[in-house]
Amino acid sequence: MRIAQNFQKNVFCLEGEWEKDLRDKSSVSAALEFLHSNCGIEYIHKNCGTVDNMKYYLKLWKKMQYKHYSICYLAFHGKQERIEVGDGSLNLDELAEILNGSCRNKIIHFGSCNTLDTDLRSVKKFLDTTKALCVCGFKTDIDFVESSVFDMLLLQKFQNYKDMSAVERDLNKNYRKLIRKLDFRIHYN
Image (cartoon, rainbow, N blue to C red; front, side, top):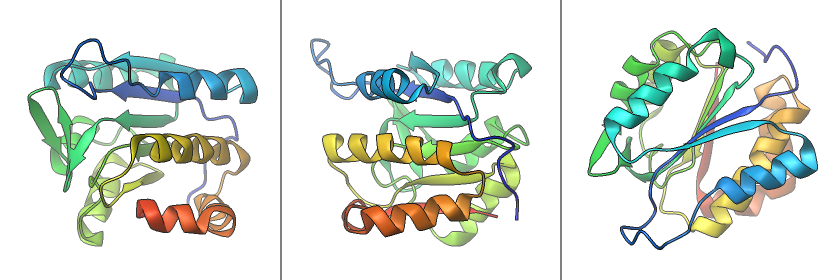
């Protein structure tokens, strides 16, 4: 079993637009700022309006200067096995290819509806291709506020443990009902 190298896991967040109306202010950035102010979790937050924009930021994230940003938090609309970025989308295989082998000791969290609505074989392929320590997310449609609160709990729990099975045990012990409601999934080797 692989474990994280350290407890402090900073967050690299890419976020899509939640609404077509440009006046809409919905964002996970307030949750990240809360975690920074109250838990000391450092973060980088970038908005992505296009697939090319997202690919650009994911390629930058792979650079050594960002190695301490070991949680990739992808906050987008989602569908089965994919995330929606602007007018386009990326499926799990496409994302795995972009991140190919660059996610050793890193966690990828899909803060999106339905992205992990897939079989275990597809998730294992994603883990194997990316070399990620852990991938997690939701298997169904989720409420923005409830899932954002859960994302905050999850990101904070990642700080408490190096072993992903300990994270899973803690979450199940303390938030079992919310996990079931959101159909949250966590996978690791």
